Amino acid sequence: MIYTGRFQNVKKYEQAGLIPISIAGYAPDYYKGIQFKTLAPKYSWWKEWHDNHLSNDWYKGKYKETVLDKLNPKVIANRLQAFGDDVILLCYEKPGEFCHRRLVANWLRSVGAAYPFANIVQHYAEIFLKICVDFLKNQNEPLCFYRS
Image (cartoon, rainbow, N blue to C red):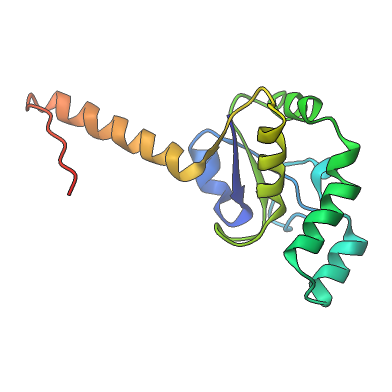
């Protein structure tokens, strides 16, 4: 699977068995992992977008034109998966904030790249549910799930 996340949580991702891959132009100093700059925004127009508070649509157009349109999504998906079965693409923004890692995920998904994407929250929820079920099974109690 290919997940998306942010640098701030890199230790948690590693503990969950994910392989972090930076797709930022510049990774933070503390990050010593894989850097895949092929998917990084170009600094010249990123700075223009950032400093001049240009629209996210402007950013999307520039990113598509200068990065995504020059790449083959199936080749990129294969290159990312070559690092391991479960990788997580990193940059800086918080979940819900505009971010190019979401553009990458949508690009790969939209062209039918062979690898599914999932939200890291879903991944943790599945792990948590498995732990809970295993615990309850070991308690010799009947399983009952209630949703309000």
